[in-house]
Image 1 (cartoon, rainbow, N blue to C red):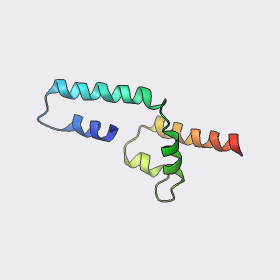
Image 2: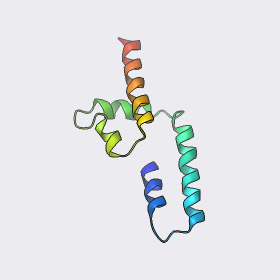
Image 3: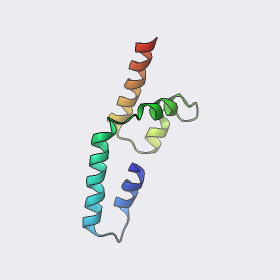
Length: 81
């Protein structure tokens, strides 16, 4: 969803007020994403030998979110093992 909103914001011919709505939606998604159970997706992506953190960089995640995902995985591992 976030990728689609980012793409939508870059498209030509779309009214600026609609683009602003898309930017506001993205801001809200980023705010609440941390409260979702997204950890399972992060774990599966990072543990996938083909993807790892490359997926996040290839999909233009902000570096702070990549670092947070990596730290979350490390903390989870340290807690369990």
